[in-house]
Length: 207
Image 1 (tube, rainbow, N blue to C red):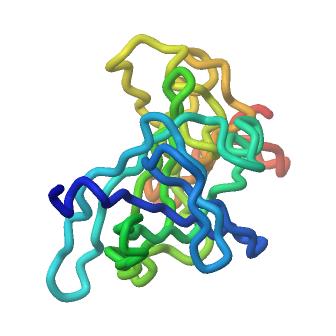
Image 2 (cartoon, helix red, strand yellow):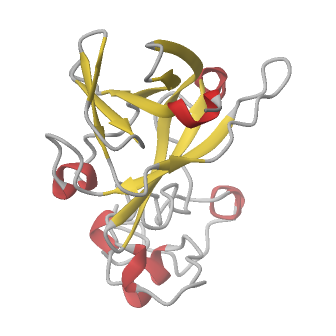
C-alpha cells in the first residue's frame, strides 16, 4: 500500500475567544494533541501560494456551514473573523503530523450550504490598516460579514460599485454601508462662498 493512501488533511481553527475547531477530510474523528478533528464532507483548501520576502501567502478554504459548535448564523455574525488557521498533513497509520502552513481567516462568503473563507498568510498582518479608512465608497467586500448580504441571493456575476446610492437603491442595504457618503471632497473644501449658500450651520445635503 502506498503511503499517500494513509494520509489526510487537518485544519485547526483558533477563534478570538481561544476556542479551537478541528476539521479533517478523513472519514472518522481524529484526536490529536488534545484537539478533535471532525470529518466534514467537501472540506478542502486550495494550495497555499507562498510568496518570497514579506509578501502575504494566500489560499482559500471551503466546507459546509454546519461546523462543530459553530452555527451558520454565528459565522455570519463574525465568529470566524480574524480566526487563526493551521493546516497539517496527518498519517493516520504512523501517527505522524506535519504542519504545512499557518495563517488567519480573511473575507468569508456563503453559497448555498457552503462557505468559502479567504486564507491569509501571517505576513498579511503587516499589510492591514489600523482603524477605519475614511472614504465615500464602502470598504466591505460584497457578501462578507460586514456587508451582511448573502451573495447567493443575487445573480452570479453581479458587481457592487460600493457607492451609497447602489447600496441603498439596488441592494436595500444602506444600514450596513461601510463608507462615508457625505464626506466632503477637495472640490467643496476649495470652492468659493457663493451668495446663495446657506450659512445657518445646517447640512449641505438637506439632512
